[in-house]
Image (cartoon, rainbow, N blue to C red):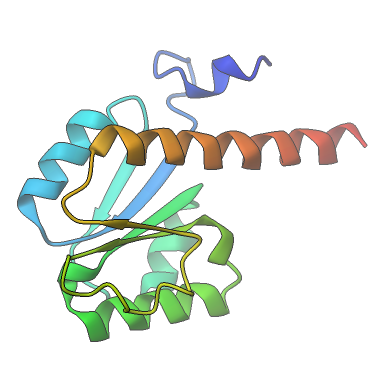
Length: 139
């Protein structure tokens, strides 16, 4: 399988890059659906039991929008990091929350942000993850 083939949405087994987004922002959901149309994207509109979302969906990348509320978003990040998912965690911060638990996430984007930059970063994360998995299988 070629690396470029991993990101095509017309593959017979469907899109390979899976992204889980925790947000309740309708505008952000619409933008991400449009920008990430080549990915398999799931949205969770609350922070209740984030582990079950991860277990059911098996995402390559997780995006947490801090506009859910700082306490809720922090709890999601902490629970996900305790599950060993820190390397694939992206935080979306409102401009008034610059110092929120950014050390937990591997990358932060401050709102407003360019969606194409987020998509490019997600592709890079997924590509890195797939290459590591491919190397493990080859070894």
